[in-house]
Image (cartoon, rainbow, N blue to C red; front, top):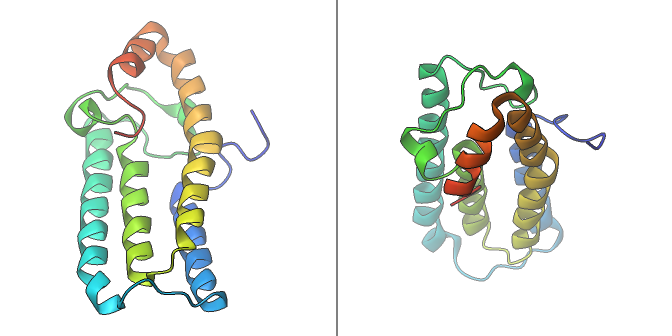
Length: 153
């Protein structure tokens, strides 16, 4: 594992990338379309993202396992029901939806690079280390789950 693995809480990471997207808009004020048109898209994506995050967190709470993404070794149950039947990482998917909504609102084509940066970071420094830990904890059960459910969608 690298030194950045599991170090930055994903919610903080979303705030960092959202801020970078806003700063990008300030530094390179390119807009593809009127923001008033994009506002409903932003609201839609943020609502969808928030719902996905809450659904995933609720499933963890029901299973009485940790939602702390910086300490996957404290996981006590492998959650495979509910939204976890469709995505292994609904909370990160929801965060991505929120960033996409923000990107739509900013209407700056450069923000797509930051969204791709978020995906790269979360895959490399959060999801892969989590998956390594879950494989150690749940062995074949987790391997089988990974074979049947995609990482994102």
